[in-house]
Length: 396
Ligand SMILES: *Cc1c(COP(=O)(O)O)cnc(C)c1O
Image (cartoon, rainbow, N blue to C red; front, side, top):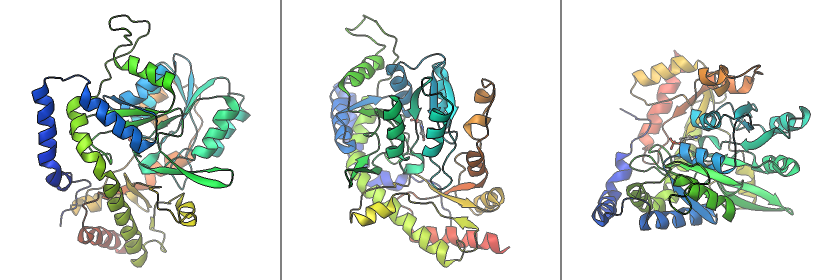
């Protein structure tokens, strides 16, 4: 049996005709830049993410870059972020001449540790130098946004959510003893999304979105999206070409209504994995540590079923990771390491740093984690096969 890490063909099949029709409309309209399809899709995403604004951009990377530019992040500014993420998060900081300051991750969630954020901002007297906090909602589960907002409010530091992996994920915000579930991208000053095909909502190419509540910041990002021109050809500020392609917007509008079902499919697969790994004794033996759902308890208490983890990736911590990876690949099972080298160990970052503290949890995660196939169309048989092969590996 072959089990790919991701297979988009099953998802495409029932939607293909509609996507072709909508994309054909764009082609025939000859309106290829911004326009109606973009406006419509922006409204749909704003509504889904519970924000006033959504601004379609070229990619998740450019969503981050345009947002940081709009917030005035520039040379020498410090941006507090996680060392355990995709390079785009840190690349955008460096491209603006700003300096990443890392806070280690929480070993259970793999997200930035709020205690570390507090310690770095408050103990080292760096509060004035830190111009932005940039948490990442890794694998589809929100970072500890309540604690992050506390620090942000106390020191007046804006927060941008890198929500590229977490569209639709919800965070339980406690206000006056009551939980309200807030959507990723609606909690900080802005949220940045990616429609890279492997994300839960993937385009037929690159695409991205910035979501936010603030009118003024939204205006600024819309300007930056078109080279900073306002009115056209008058440039008070520098921007770029960060426009979402209407062909992508057309395809994504067809897909968006299915997103809640796809999330449910991923969550079901995650539950089955939990069951199968436990039954196989792999959890008790300590060979496999399952992903921790940080907000499951609140979800149960409230008797609601918000998407508190949307499983863009199902990432386990395992013994003998590299050997297991090779064994599974030899058995035609697609697995991946997200991410093998933490940011502070990347050449492009290391070179710029004067003295670099250590981030033991990020390093441990890089050497112990493995992402297993979790896409919604994965079959029960495939999941049994994956768990059987992992059992076989640890019995050798
Ligand atoms: C995918 C991703 C990005 C970049 O998105 P692109 O659309 O590929 O540019 C940024 N941050 C994180 C955490 C991602 O997973």
